[in-house]
Image (cartoon, rainbow, N blue to C red):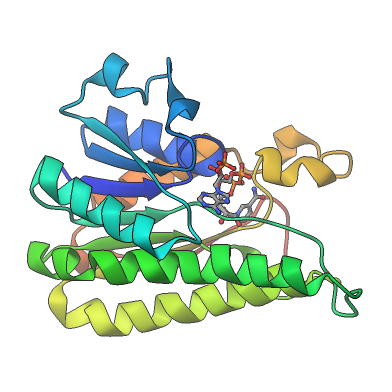
Length: 237
Ligand SMILES: NC(=O)c1ccc[n+]([C@@H]2O[C@H](COP(=O)([O-])OP(=O)(O)OC[C@H]3O[C@@H](n4cnc5c(N)ncnc54)[C@H](OP(=O)(O)O)[C@@H]3O)[C@@H](O)[C@H]2O)c1
């Protein structure tokens, strides 16, 4: 089945690899970007791959109005939507004993990593229900499964996102909506730049492989969708 997919964070990193893989599989894409010029001249540019296959829309995860507008414009252009892939996200190292003023960074994690996917899914929900075969893929993290070291803020946001995934699964089940929370450890993107001196980039999960996971997931029937996928590049016991 050819799907109409909203993807956030598609201009770089994991979202970019997923968008390219989905495009190559023949799906229609609606990409929400903070800067719509950030894909100009690439295969995700509608001028290059065709405006019948791709549309671009301004999207800032912290802005509820832009989430609404993105969904509405997608319906105007493609007539329906059946899939959401949440890739927009931020990382920071705010620890448990955070310093004065760092609460802003914690709020930012909350707004982008948790409320962003929540607002967008809420706006798209009626369309996912209408399609009777809605799919939601969320880039959570292994940091949403276990809290490592002192990454208090990031991990808190990803545990909360995982909880949201479980609720979406519960609410959507009878409507044919299936949710998959993808939980990688380190993926070779800009987000992981800070640890590339410790884990060499080639030893990390590659974003293109997450792209393949996502397009394979979209080929599966609703009777065979994993709720959670832990993707490890090193042994975790
Ligand atoms: N890389 C890893 O090791 C790893 C591991 C586990 C989970 N994840 C999760 O996977 C997702 C994608 O990560 P990545 O590695 O691809 O990160 P990345 O390379 O840093 O890319 C982040 C993406 O999110 C977008 N974004 C950031 N803040 C946004 C906002 N306020 N509104 C809208 N878009 C925003 C960025 O857009 P701009 O270009 O405009 O900034 C960019 O497209 C994230 O949720 C991350 O937590 C990553």
